[in-house]
Length: 277
Image (cartoon, rainbow, N blue to C red; front, side):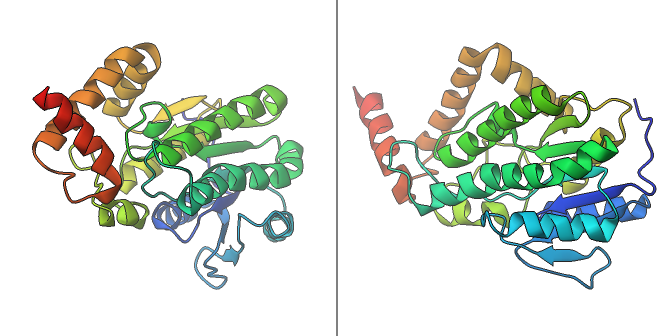
């Protein structure tokens, strides 16, 4: 389905100083695209210039997007890549960790897309949202991440209905990639080890580039064959997906993997009481 070259295309990448962002910028530049990034951590003099912007600030985003578009001379492709994670059990009240994930993973992408749409409509361009497999196959103890990414997909679906005649709208669904986004979860004793299979960042970047160059903008793109299977199960056999997650979780609990995680204490206690009854 590849039919569009990246050469000369004007690309804006959010979260451009992070793990995905840096690899994306390098790959896009190697394909002769013209790239500008937005990130809280600016790198204006890098090989891929990154303009500083707090994407959670409603007043800062429109001017930052305008500056990037002006620098590029227009916009053919927006990649909403910025994202944060963190532990957030669904049984506990939402806190600052939850609020920040909703702000960065959903509302920042919404703000950036809205600000970029006039230029994208002019160019009949594309927008790609980097979501997560957890938008389709949710996992315990990470409710905010799953909720924010599922909401991001719902936003992409609504946007597609509104502007899809002129702007291609795609969502890419990576699984777990080794990056600092998982640090706070691991520090809380809630590692995804044994629950989500890691995949290389190069594979995710490759999937994003294939999405950008496809003749027609694909709707949903898994980054691996396993990912396609997991998404199919999550969407078409959710009860089976639930059983698979519960079985994996029960094995981890029985092995004591979450014994040292205060945020999982309630779940650990319930499972042990159920096992004794």
